[in-house]
Length: 320
Image (cartoon, rainbow, N blue to C red; front, side, top):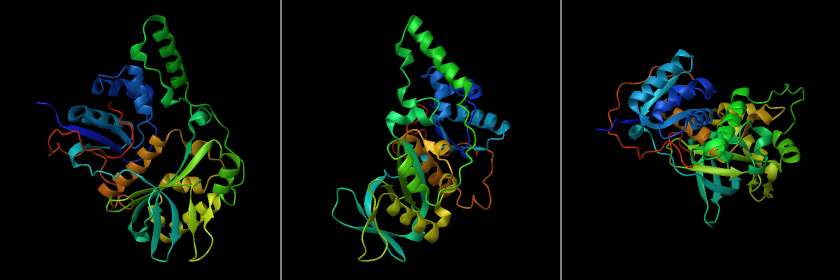
């Protein structure tokens, strides 16, 4: 009988040493090469590994704990399902609600400000500029298992050297924080990155995605619709005023940034994964901000061995 399948969630969105954990995780992912496992470890973020056997999950969580990385082993069948993000652009401010029009529809919908569980802000590199912000382009990893001989060895060694050298060092920016980080991004990085706001409700029934380059925000009834960085800033001001607790750590770092380079997500899937992790963590442990959940893994899963549930849409699994 197959073992129940589990997901490992980290308590904090911290980097995990791929050189060490590539060897630790490899037995749990026998279908992947050792290099592919290391790459999976690097891009895991808070949702570290998905859909792996419970025995491997507990073993890996224990190793993470030895390194001070608090992790939780959760049965896949017990994880709440998240909806797919719905792209919205036309939004209107109201005192108690945010109204919006989903893209490609004519109707309007609304949600109360206090219904928001997560208000995630992310800067995502456009595909052709990923190498400016990232050490290794995960979307361009060659299929090493399909190569043979010298070509396979050369590609493998080059990737290992790049990985083990770590990201290029950058001096801390001495710039003064701009008055509006979004105007700064639009002016200096707009052709290289996209900016999004992801809003998830506490019942996990609604996931809205608002691109800065498409937004039209009406702050006062009958007023002109504001677009781009100005409109996005008005929305973020409302999020800070109406539901500040919904802003996760990455959003707060971005709002306080003088330089965004260290905060850029290389792919939209990475931003999906971070937003999904925030929602799962806050849903599973609603008092985590004031009282951290226990770092130890829970007992054996009570569910079956189903692997159909998924903690987040569009986010690539590290176990496949």
